[in-house]
Image (tube, rainbow, N blue to C red):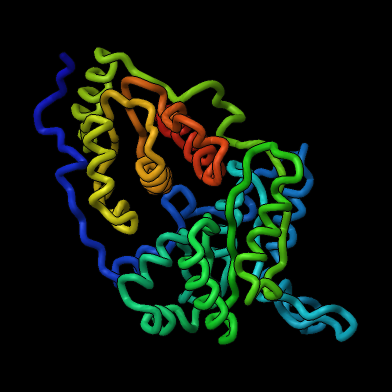
Length: 344
């Protein structure tokens, strides 16, 4: 039977509480994008739309010659009025989050926010709608990564929230995901996004970013799986190096995630350096699968390596899940799990 060094803790021992103030304080780019800039973005030469998007976003806040207002500033009278929102449309792994973070860093002023869709809806849940509007009002920029379109109620709340913020001068930038290398599907995703936020859709300019998943440019195949012996070795080595390793069975984690609101998943990961999961297996319950996706998003933001035994993590979405309405979420999670299990 597998054994691990004593002293390792479990994620299931944690039941974090996250306040509205803590959520607001956390609305900054993920760790790996703390230094993101337009200069550090590496466009794929096979997809010229990536370089074009960089150039357009560079002018987002830059004044034009003659006193214009840049991407969203004043234009010549014969030109159409610039829009206060931009939607980065494209598959995952093409650098949308990098560009979104670069735009956040480029934004003037100290009051600006960067978060995922679920973090903003969690903030509304924690503070209430009116208090959230008051908290975010006056921001120069609100960045929303991974805008979700599958919950009509949350989408309606976010549309109303963004409409109020735009009316006071705040600019908005958003992303969502489309399947990789799916010709034409990104444009349908853009249409879906604009349809769902129809009340404020006229405020958004769409930038198309095509490309292949950069996480797979050097990573092929499946998520890395360890034997029981190798699992113990990796956990022991990480622990001996002073890294905080959590050890759980896959079933224990899945059960625990059902008892923790997704807005608190980031609290589960505080101080964790490596996550070790035993006996990964295929999931057939869609609720469990979607909670795992939300958890993996936070693990990826924190850049925490995964060590696993059992089924490869990118093969856990069973049944007909990959052909259903949440296909985009599952494909994004699979891409991220391959990357996370390949980290040292």
